[in-house]
Length: 363
Image 1 (cartoon, helix red, strand yellow):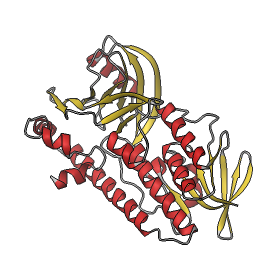
Image 2 (spheres, helix red, strand yellow):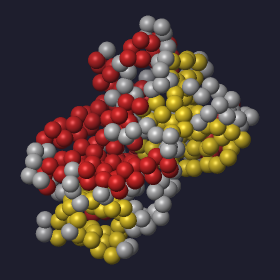
Image 3 (cartoon, rainbow, N blue to C red):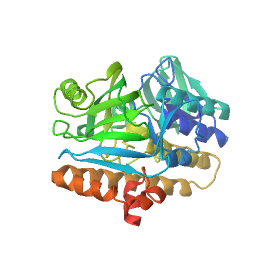
Image 4 (spheres, helix red, strand yellow):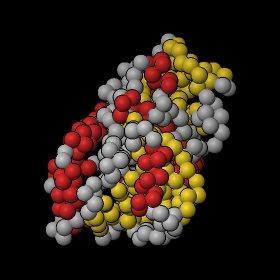
């Protein structure tokens, strides 16, 4: 019998597998795709502090760029540059990043079964029988990191994220943006009311250009962003996925021995749609807590860390709702303050791209 079965080999699942394996737990990861990192579903902008929290070393194997700040264009057409004066985030190739995490999980002792789709789950005594395209497996615990669809979680455990909080997004790899690669670029537009457009630079020529909206006609809205802000770029490839802008699910499932993490559980910053850091952080602590339980130890320190992360995600989701209702001028006031010389030392020394609300409250 497997100690811990992980469904999904995205960052959350792989970080959980690495953590549990390092703590002497037998782990098997079930991934329906034939290759790790496929399909790509992320702009790949990750905070350096977040990577440190995940104990993921910065590596040339996946690193594309480092950025030190952000450029904003507001709904009122004003531009603001926030420069922290030092590198604060990494632009990563998500395919290579996920492969990097998979190698780390395997080195720790985890087994990863590719091309293995989970089709059903049944209770068996105190554990589970996991039905897959490769046959049946028994497990004591399950960590569900299957991603946005969360079909297993919804079908067998009747839990899930708020479907109204998922937003479609289109992202293209482009050539010829011509912008300074030291910054990420955000464009707030009336025709992108639910989110914003962005350009995450890989270098001075290549970048990841995206737009999100739940309004109909996302393709036309994306094309309008391109024509307004980047009329000279050449689109090399394009992907479509979804991002979450709601609150995380309330019950992770420890009592049931079935833990939901990552996108499946809404472990995503509602303000930016970024889920790698929080999903990985909660997954790591969940895996550590399970290991403690299996070894007869104390899971409480890890459960407390999960609680802190969930509180922060709920705060961020609430803040996002407040921003959505605020007058257009509110964003300009906030950005003007953030771009001022008085705030720059704070941003350089104290700002946290992930624990955003906690950083503001400390201020």
